[in-house]
Length: 206
Image (cartoon, rainbow, N blue to C red; front, side):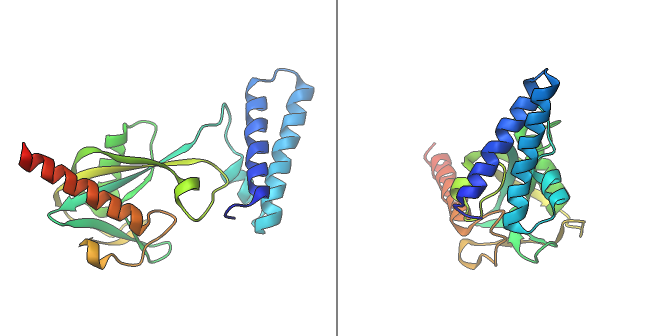
């Protein structure tokens, strides 16, 4: 779906339709915006061959003014290694993380994901970066996603296999395993290592 004009158009139609449904009072306008939303779903379904119902649930199931989804990722360091988890969905690796829960702050979400996916108790240090996934990942999504990388110190942990991950292991920058590229890339892991090294150098200089 990368750089597809049809996807850009479908996303814009969905955005306009959702805004219209949020603020319109006239029933005829509401019917028109519902039809525009249906058209956006039909476009995505036609080009991806994903069933209409699934697309609607993922792409056009919200109400109110449309805003980006937020994904948090924990860059958990222990010495010169970073903690990664092996996903059950594809057998590949990523930093612990997932959709941010509205009940928690960014740091609270990161701690929760680290514990749930890696069994890791961590101390959050700082936000490393906030990225627009559609600009920094090869795969383009039918909705906007902001990905937040947070530097963390590993305190202790006890990994237990769970619904999402089957293993948690520390890796140094030279032996990063095969990645689940929809969730993180090697360039972003290097970015986290560079931020970590900068933090260490600042601490030493102080």
